[in-house]
Image 1 (spheres, helix red, strand yellow):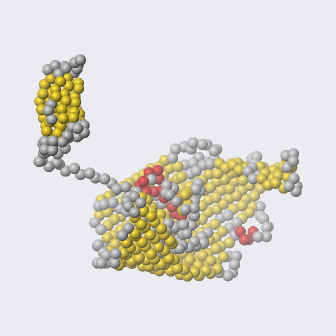
Image 2 (cartoon, helix red, strand yellow):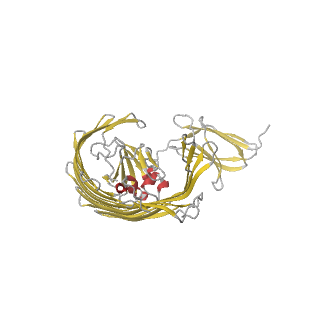
Image 3 (cartoon, helix red, strand yellow):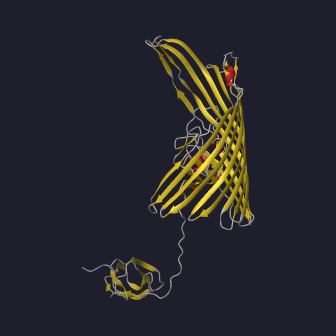
Length: 558
């Protein structure tokens, strides 16, 4: 039998070693215009085959990395022509190849260090346009519930730092106001060393904000919008979900300046349904409290943040910044109740009282955090850094609890209000020194902190209630905390083992004055806080960590 198309076969070999050349590129070109007819990569034995070639004049081209290109003209006269080429030798080229530069980006979204895990905020795209709370939702060991309460490893007792500086305001309040787009990274410090404050039994969350750009001017803006709710709960108000932020950055020579502003509205609509019952076997009755109604949140915040850095020279760096913001949250619970008492045997209704309960809670606050820092680097690369912080939080709110008739929801049975004000003022000063000793690093420092919180809480009932203990539901609570702290620690490395060991001493005094007590409540504490951390690296993929840290959970002033 004769082939219906012409066929070309051959083998490519190295001219010196006479060994087959694998993956050489063999192609057939038209002799008239050098256009490609067909191509083939040689096999392990260097062989190639073209089995369907039309008649005409062609050029065989062989290309292989590091060898001179090979060309061979040939012609096909008949459709069934068979061409078998002898071994085609390729000669090594003396010409150098053009430079090829392969660039890549290190995947440093997660960094596992001796005493902490660092996460880059840009890996959480869904949080853009939101707040620091939205970023935290994505971290392991951190949980955020539907009310915005944050817990670390199951505990709400943790310390929040912003650029390494503690804040007095509770975590939920301050993190819900910090725009996600200003965050560079988040450090989860589960076993803090001695240089950190001893507060927070669950550890520390340190949020680092973005610095300025390279020399030049930059503007970045983001807009955020939420789609309509998938479920309609017939709430009193439709939820709004939108926001935006803008950041201006400028860097020139020794100056680095940035300013940003943001607004975020993030309402949540929903409903609540429940049932509670008690059985009285003596009276043979069952009392029920079924309820159903609205439970929703109106939430918004806005603020401005500014940071300025001035590098006088290589040894001296000055930094200043402030953050001012406003937060508002309203929680509404409009619930229909149908309280009833029934006969346990036959289900007959003995008593029934339907009513409507409207419980609206407002929480508001204005916040100001300002800081001034100075870092001096000595000729031996040791560093002396100082930091001063002032924080003010004006917190206030009210709870309106109103019981009305269920039919018209206009006839009042009772109104209870709980207005409060709770301003906080705080100061901090910190001085740190670090230097190299041997193959390790020694650090020591001193910190002073003082905060004052004045709380005024009221309680009114309409119509007036003459219950004997009603005076205990209102009053004032003033507290002053003052802490002096000293620490020293040493970090080093021995082969594959990294370690840090340190000791912190704190002298803490607390005074609480209550309107219900003529005697002030004093608490004096003198504590030592030891710590150590170990990190052993087996290879590039595996390491093991162990740590010990003694912490203290200070009472919440609220």
